[in-house]
Image (cartoon, rainbow, N blue to C red; front, side, top):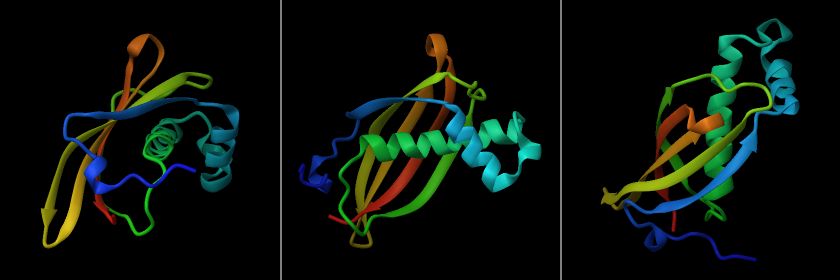
Length: 131
């Protein structure tokens, strides 16, 4: 088992890795089970699934994480709605790290692209890193 990623492992400007995930029917079904089947195929569903894919991308790349991390803030930009069956490539990059009030803060950029490099989403996650 890999040891958890530590504060010292983050280097501003460095890519942490990437993951490709498909906007597959089970993801749409899970969305509809939560928000209702009336939302099927709509803009809200596409936007919500893009946010879920961004978070899954982060969780899939930045692993294993030490227990006790806190997500302090999230900024998200939706450039295009993902399409059913589309493979979305998510890249996670360390933008910055700093210690504020004795806590370790990270800004991680998470960018997703679809078919032919089409920009789908980008976001910045500010994490208080535990270890």
